[in-house]
Length: 107
Ligand code: FES
Image (cartoon, rainbow, N blue to C red; front, side, top):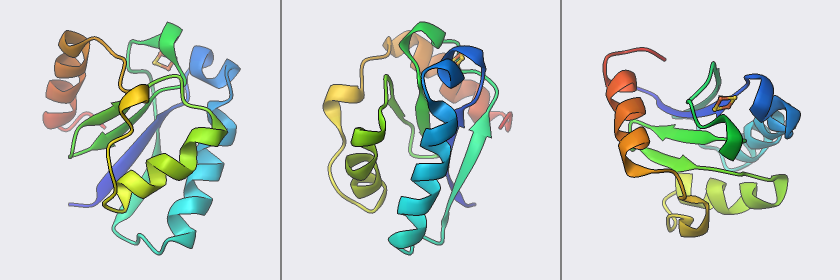
């Protein structure tokens, strides 16, 4: 299974720049040669007020309020670096719900 970076592209996240994030993240992942990682749009994670939201799957990391300036650190994490703790602000119960949904194959 490919690793995925799911970038919400619904209205709230888009209004805060998630369209730009998806393109910039693709560039960074490509530049690092992370061929096993796919950057994909996602319909909505249900944390719209805390967007833009990015979820890494299947490893299950969720980054909220992401800005372009955060993408280098997120890319480092995807490449095996440390988890970006300051962007991990979503309520654990919502995270669990979304991870369960993703586990069922709803991607
Ligand atoms: S609009 Fe992005 S989580 Fe809902």
